[in-house]
Image (cartoon, rainbow, N blue to C red):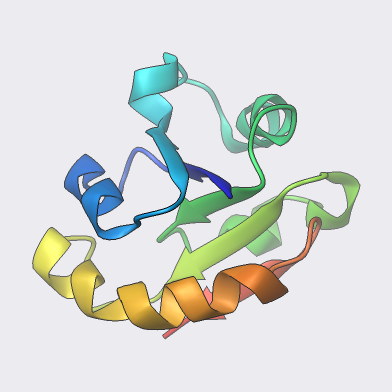
Length: 105
């Protein structure tokens, strides 16, 4: 699966996702792009957008985008707080659908 990590997620988390093509927003040169345009750009290249932004689903009309959005709900966006979510996140990815939010707690 092709995954795009939001700029608020530590890029080192990509190491925890074997078997997936993982890129970060800054690596793509999209760090200053607002969420609506970011999702539009991402849907052309990625299967899922991974973020910790809990408000994204309220700020964007996600059904109009052809990309799944996965929201990681952790104590913080620090690597040590996100790593424990990886097994649940990997289990949820096959069920993540374009235009919908999947929340991983």
